[in-house]
Amino acid sequence: MNAVNEPVVIHKGLDNVYVKESKICYIDGEASKLFYRGFSIEELASHSTFEETTYLLIYGWLPTRQQLDQIETHLGSHRSLEPKIIDLLRMPYAKSDAMDVLRTAVSALGVYDPQPMTDNITVRIEKSLTILAKVPTIIAAFHRLRSGNDPIPPKGNLSHAAEFLYMLTGREPGPYDAHVMDVALILHAEHEMNASTFACTVTASTLADMYSVITSGIGTLRGPLHGGANEAALKMVLEVGDASNAENYVADALAHKQRIMGFGHRVYKTWDPRYLILKKLAGELAVRKGQTKLFDTAVAIETSARKHLEGTPIFPNVDSYSGIVFHMLGIETDLFTPIFAMSRISGWTAHAIEYLEANRLIRPKALYVGKIGLPYTPIDQRTGKPQE
Ligand code: ACO
Image (cartoon, rainbow, N blue to C red):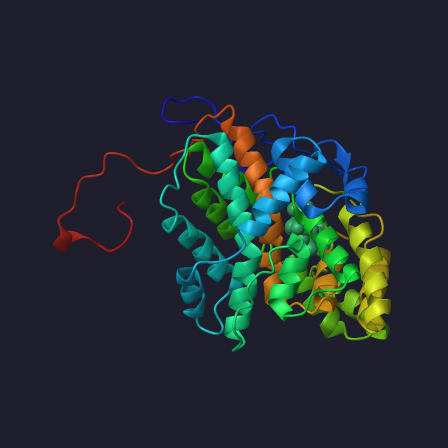
């Protein structure tokens, strides 16, 4: 009951609460299906690019050649960072969390935009695409600076995926590595009303600017219950070390009620369709890079875990092989969640814009269960505990 004695249902975690109608993403967690704007994730991973998928998510249709050129040109011409942002990236401690740095840098981009606020949806989308363009540059520059190297300016004519790998390493990636990174970005670009997308939607519903919207998403993604499981999954595989250790590791972990990282999902009650795509890419990369031991260890963990978890709805999720893929591309583990953000800005923007098209300020309620009407106690009579 609430203060006026009406029955109240509390939806802890907002489980099964719908906040809007949407045409952006459909997940069938029982059938292992994921669609962006009606297109299956398998089709997009096989035929699309991250830039095209971004266009699809935000605008709602596959772009014509001219529309694709426009978005690619916008991204390519907005990747550079102002010196003030580079100076900001020099300031964190060597051990500062990369997500903290990314959140701060995206927020700072808004400080240097003379007009961050706008009512115009087209301008909002342009500002989001500008942020999207700069995020790979921010992540790469931060990593190079903390490693004692100078940031590498963007080439301007590479894809989102290739440009990131180039700015990170100083070497233009080969077509296969660029393709793998591109597919990984497509797979992480959108996933319906997850916690960070909801955070972005709440912020957008106040009519705040897109820097605030995307900063909200980064802050929410930072938590270990959301982003971050891919790092934990890779650490687990590295700790297991060899396929021959997998069975003992899994049996021991499950006997001690520990979770197998990269397994289980709130929505998927069978395998995550993104897992299958990433596993295939990880296997191919392993052969090309001569890192089959890592991949074989991950497969052995998967096989043991599925044997022990048979009869449960706990299957491999997107994180079971994504960390391995990023590791084999030569990326530091603590950059995995920032890369997730670098891709998910597309989905965050799509949902914020869709919500704003029929906006209503999001303002849920909390059921008050405290006391009311307490007498105000003078400071020298207080007990330092809750008032009886
Ligand atoms: N390994 C072993 N057991 C598991 C796992 C796992 N990975 N996941 C769930 N379970 C078990 C739980 O221990 C629990 O068992 P119990 O009922 O005997 O106590 C049961 O399954 C239900 O667990 P919940 O946490 O209620 O399930 P939920 O669907 O809410 O959990 C979650 C989803 C948080 C992802 C969970 O599966 C997990 O912690 N997985 C490991 C971390 C991970 O891989 N996260 C990435 C998810 S994908 C993404 O966010 C991009």
